[in-house]
Image 1 (tube, rainbow over the protein chains, first blue to last red):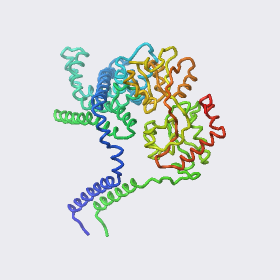
Image 2: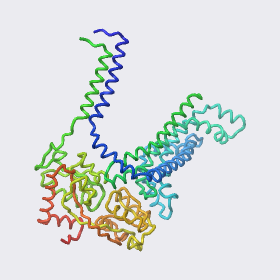
Image 3: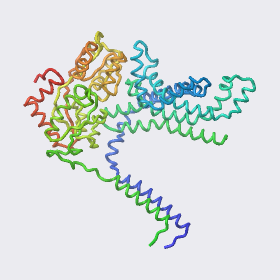
Image 4: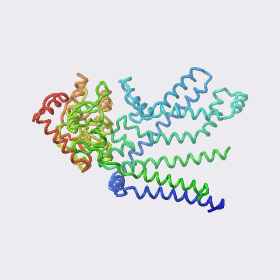
Length: 264
Length: 272
């Protein structure tokens, strides 16, 4: 049996399609759909979750995410500049901070902020309650990651830009602020948007702080409803709720990356 | 017969895929392991799911071993079966929803768990082994004597507990601001930090906490909810084990070993 090269390739391709169909088909046939539907797709439970899952839970998830992102962005930019600073102690502190916080689970940091700060300063309160604690707790970790991204962005701006700016008589600081950082941010917007997507999901860690009916976010809301109804459907609803935010965001990242690739 | 290499490679992919699918679909061996006529998920072990910490029912001692009222009672059951007790710490949601039992993670759940109608729908309970009431814990000197005193105040509850369900019932009526914590330790910490004004949980749990932190906290109200704790197994999954647990409970109450465990962990003897 001798096949020509074209035929061989076509046969191989068909077999690969076949393998794919067989695997997917087997999984679908093997799954117990009746039980799955009963456990994960009870329409009455889905209906009972609306509109609270959007008006309260999703709203809080978005708020926590944006809070943490804003905190992380400001602090991360500062860290990036410190890492590139000519002052050696700044570099040491920034490097130590980044290494430390990249290595710690966000859950632990959040716990330390939520329970450690009240012990350390019993008379003071983190402004904003749960929101403030999450913005700081998640922001501290996010800042470490963002600092590295932003530093890479700043270093990606050609040296000539800084040299030209200095030649024109700008101070180092002014050149950084008006020439370098704006160009650096254009480079780092896609990776920063990815960080935003990660933070959206990390906001589910809010539960460790203890949440009220007003400060509940999507995951906790799903788990609570699971407890009340003794059924896993709410988790599915919670999952889809996250996709409302994360899918458009990943589209944005893709567009931005495309545009940046073209601009080069 | 020789196959061209591309075809062979593709054939190999299909073969591997088929293998993977069959392997993935292989049925779990259920109930293969027996001890004293009772099915167990792991040989020689009575695997018990719980959620730590929940002193005095289950918590870790200084050496890291899980100890407590529930642990001692389940040890009696394990001894009866001639096996060892193995304790798994899982989120209370998994226990309460019955999933830990359904998925064969453990044989039984012993987690200071109240028998409720809803939980009975998803798991089989043993006879009640403990009468519990809910209680309000506040910092010593605070004047919160009832839920009425807590209007607009933050009250801590533990997620997925009957105390939380009880508080939920009065949330609107009494104007409470309920804060849910994942576990007991976080709830206690928040009360100690002043993040909440009062905390609701099972009475024996607070009694134990006050014992460990003398002078700092007091129980100012008890809510008699008529709750009873039970051990549970998979729904319709292991009637032999439930029967065994009930036998052991009955025997322990008769021969005084239940009273001994009660005195050791709770203190005063049960009224009955």
